Image (cartoon, rainbow, N blue to C red; front, side):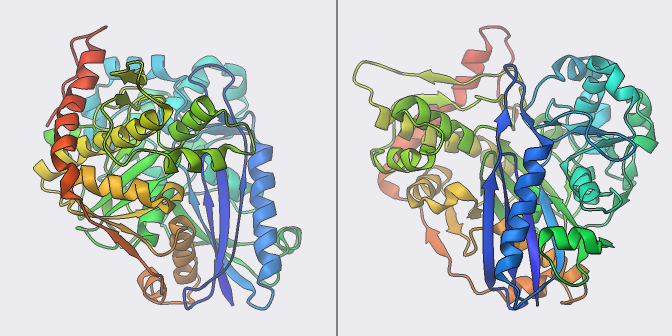
Length: 502
C-alpha cells in the first residue's frame, strides 16, 4: 500500500506516493501559467490547475499499481482566493498570493479597524496577500459576482469540491486568512462583522490530519485510483512542508526556497506582543500536535531568479530552467558589490510593504550579468538575515536551518546562505518536503501509522550540511550593513518611514 502527498503551489503542483517505510515510489509535477492581466495582478486559471492536478495524480497512480494508494492529503499555497457558486464552481480565476488589487481595502481597514486590533485577534498584520483583504476587494470591485457567491474559498476548498468532497478549510490555512481568532480557534465574529462578510460564506474549519471524506468511485476511476481512497485534511504549504522537513517541536527552523522564500519557526503558543507585531511576524497554527509557528518571508525568490534568467540570459518558455542553472553556475564566488532590493512583488517581513519595489544599486560600466546574478542571491539572503537578526533578539534560535524546495537543490545557493546567515544550513534528504509532509498527514489520518512523526522517522534520506566560510565574513558584514539602509533610503523618496523595527 502507499499514501499520496500532493503539493499545490503558485506555479506548479506535485504529487508523490510513498510506502509506509517512507520510500518515494513515484513523483510527477506539472506547471500551470500564472496570468498577470495588469501590473500587480496575479491569477491562475482554475481549469489549468485542475488539469495539472488530475494529470499528476493519474501519472503517479499508474506507477504504483502494485502499491495502491490508500489515502491522500494536500499541501496548498496560501493567500489564494476564488468565489464559488452554489455548485462550487469558480466564478472567476484564482487570485494568487502576491496580487495587490486589495491595496485600497487594506488601507481602509488599517484606518477603521487598526493593525493593532487585527493582530490581537488574528495574530497577523493586514496585508494585500491575505484572504480577507481579497474577499473585501471582490465585494467592492465585482459586486455582481459577489452576489452570486455561495462560498468564499481558497485553492484548498476549491480542490476538495472538485474531488467531490464537501469543502472545508484546515486550521493551519484558516489561521492565514486574517479572519481566524487565534485564541478561540474559530472564525472571528468581530472581524467578519467589520468586513461585512457572512460567516456562512466561509467553509467549516477542521483539524489538520483529520479524515474529511472518501473519493467516490467515479472520481477514483477518473484519476486512475483503485479501492476506497481516504481524503485527509492537509494544510497551508509552509507548515506542511516544515513538517516534512522535520519541524515537530520549537527550536527547529525550516526554510522553503520556492516561488516565495519562507522561513518558519515552531512556537508553543501565539506571540502577540508589541515586538512581534512591529516586525509583522505572523502567528499561524501549525499542522502538527497543536503547535503554532511564525514565519519570515520574501515574496520574490524563484520568481526573481526566473526574471533574471529572462532578462540577463534571454530565457524563453521552455529553456528558463536551463538558463537559470547556467546563470547560477557562472556566478563569481566572491560576494557582489552591487545591492539588489528583492521587492519585485512587494516586500515580505519585516516591512510587509505591498508598494515597495525592486531596485538595483551600485551599478557601473564594469558590472556583468554574472555579478548581477550573484547580487540577487546575496541580497535575497541579506533580506532573510534582517529577519533572523530580529528573531534572535526575540529569543528564537536560528543557528541551524533545514532547507528544502526547488532552489535548495543548488549547492551554491545553500553555501551562500550559510555564509550570509552565519548559520549551519542542512539540505533535507527528501527534496519534496511538501509532498512528504502531506503524505505523513495522510498516513496518520487514515490510521496507517500512529502519528506523522512515526511515518517521518521511517524515512531514510541522506542530508548535506553547509557551514559558514570565514573568508567572506567581513565582506558580507560590510555589504549587509549597507543593505540594512537600502529600504529606508529608497522608501524616503516618498515617506520618512523605513527603519527596521528591532
